[in-house]
Length: 278
Image (cartoon, rainbow, N blue to C red; front, side):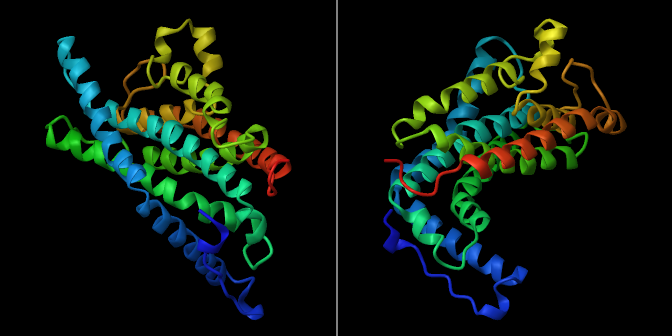
């Protein structure tokens, strides 16, 4: 994308500070980014195939091992996988690409604030993430493996908080990512840590308790914890809980997620580069 493809967001001086004006500016930028995404057929196809491949591969593994497909557990995993592999990675590449094309630098000369630029640029990727999670949910229902969640609020908090966290972590990661191609290497440490040690692929209960307790403070772990508490009714240690028990176990992952959001936002604000790296 070049700078000329982005809309010029007009706002009168009297409404620049209003919430309505800020919303219009973000929506204008987000709509431009969405149009660019829809023109990229490869990205659209990958967005549609991702959840299908996830559902199919997990289902095949379960069947081959003589296990029943755990629908709520699969949806909880889909939240974590989509956030780290789709949202985080794609946001890093998007921010770096816009920076190196000097798009971000040019947008800062207009009415858009720094936060509005990042949010508007991130909206298409976050929408794709949500669509993929919903697609997995629909697939689970179609396969007849769905059961009512223990609590609907906790997984929603996990998705909203996790989405915001991926934005700030991606913004921070661009500080040491020189090119779009380099993102596959610079994002690898967080992706590996999140997928291997957050309870996403291997339950935390399989690790020694002191190790599992430490892993609970990784960025993606509270998202997985909250998702499983609400959807599966299971704590990080493998204990089953009802709605009241889920909320009793929720304060720690909520606090960890909030802490990462604060730390990520502060770091991103200090290290994010708006101009191309030379």
